[in-house]
Image (cartoon, rainbow, N blue to C red; front, side, top):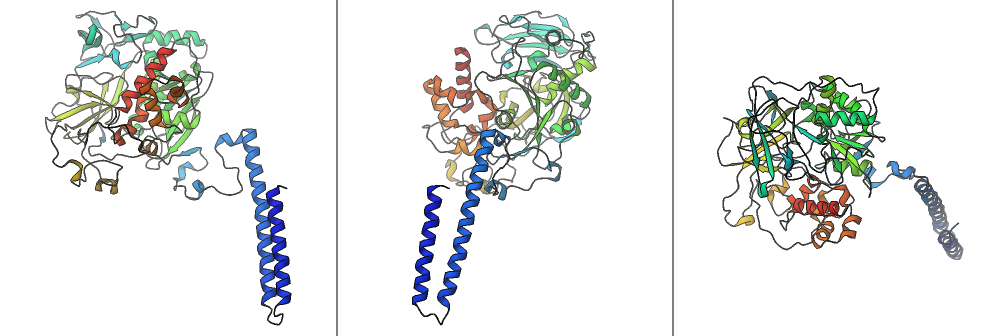
Length: 548
């Protein structure tokens, strides 16, 4: 027994002895002294029992930590934790399932959510493969086609001079009408005018069960689906000879106006499962699926009943659907680890390579935003022209096109093309107007976590998105707002400052390997200093990658 416990018991006994003597010396006829002594004895016994219980509880927790059982997330204490006492009410379908409850984050409710109907009448005429979409790719890859060439879907277009085995292919069949260049003669786009009837390069049948991993990798490289895989850290195309520790796929998206992946996966169930089978051949570890546990809608059977994958549910606000957040809470990335990530439709594209024996780059894309007359879903292919997708559907002309969501997407023009990993096009009002008195005027249309704005008191009210920054860049001050919206055990503001001063050791120690731009996009949204947080993080990631 510890010294503290012994002292506590000795003190209680001494007090009881003194009280008993006082009671005998007092007026015994009243009996109040006796009752008082009995009361103190009862309290002493209760305190002693609680001390023994607390010691036993501490020993249980210590034993759980030493054995590694505490790493499972279970509560081995005899007492319920505060998190358990005040845990949110979970939907019935989560009973008995592994659930991670995230208490930090922020949902931005915007007008213009896409109606869950696919408009088959919308057809894009031109498509492009864009080398800048691939982090780490040489800015001037080796282009294998010329303007005027006819290509089939799946034909090789270009490859990285540093890694010639990684081939990039045409998403559609048609005529190559442009090879556009950017700064310093870099290749920005290879543009194809699509045929009315798609033609495909037919692939040979592949025996998935009877072939080696090396043969499978070679097949994927030739087919052109290898660039759909992204490796963390750094979000780069993985090396063909690298074996990932694990593979992670998020089956839901919590970003503003994001597509509903339960709706998107309809009709692609077989291809998605086949894609999971392929991924299991590529890793010695585990394929993890992050599933929606927020209760709004039960995950599609293609996700909840998927075979060959370990499933984890997540309950919380954005960025709960980010694969980086899910990796952090399932199995964090350490120095030297390599994990791969894919989108749901990327997995289906890999699966169709085996079920259809062709590179089928089909995509269901959400056209979202209050500036559209009719927000809706369309069926198209990778790299579709934006002007074709929104033709005759704009409510006004003074808009900004964003490939992706409003937090982490990229600005585009009507002549531009969707980025390869995006299945969302967001159209918002161009915010280039002057706001008289700025934030001093109470506004219900300004998304914010700050209580100084009345809109923060009504977070469920949908707002019309526009691009005004509501302030200018200012001193990089510590406010704690970054940490309030990032559900990861990382200090993002300290990390950003370390990147700016080039402190390599501190950058590595503060968890940069676990982050991608989309993970800190919400930090940029809440930043009172208006810092380009995503740009700073990419600067740090590139800096660490160059250091090897």
